[in-house]
Image (tube, rainbow, N blue to C red):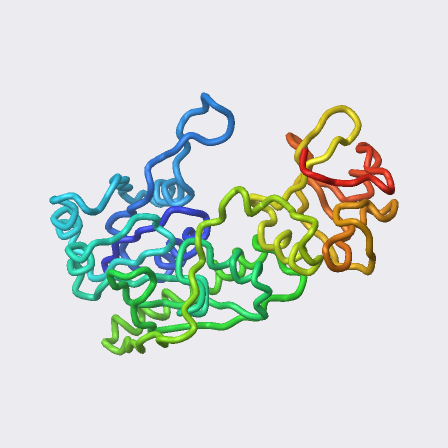
Length: 311
């Protein structure tokens, strides 16, 4: 089939690769325009999809919007049988959705209608969900409201991080998309409307949400830590001996303990919470690599009795 691919982050790359591996022709890849990354002054960095498409010799398009007057005409000129969308980041208006005869298929990393929106993997873990999944749906004008063709469910292990679930779902989703394309090519791709109940929204993660509030239950904070690991990373602030600094927590576990929320309870980095305690297992200081708690504690003052409060 002749396909136009639309995607931006690393999550979308396995799907693009799998589509090509199954012999489909990708006429062009739409992605977000390069953006500055890292320290101020660095050159704009192409998206992961941009880089992958260039490696495969695929034309890359980076429009700022698809709502322009000529967006539908430009897509029509590529003559796609179907458009595949994976975490693209731009809204597809009706004029664009109507271009391909096979429609626009979207891969979404949740069990719709739960967790529609931008951050379904992180939100599922933050909520303590026991399972999630991937779904291929036909795009509609609403936010992730289209009917579903294929889906696959998967358990969220109790200690799984957002990064680990991201990689698993990206792989499962890539396989699901090529299965959907095969069914479409045979004229046997059927859709089922989403349930009208159970709708939740996976809003983009706000920076303020990543700050650890020790007054919350340890289980809630544990889910926050693993949901945001490795990026953007849940964090606390403390004076570790030289100057106040921000520290990311990348892995943790819930343990027994009770004291004023934020109090360091022992020499192995157990911190009192509103309910129970959270032991910090892997941390990352600013500008340094992630490290086990034992290594972190050798280089940072985090004495028993210290109170971790906002600075």
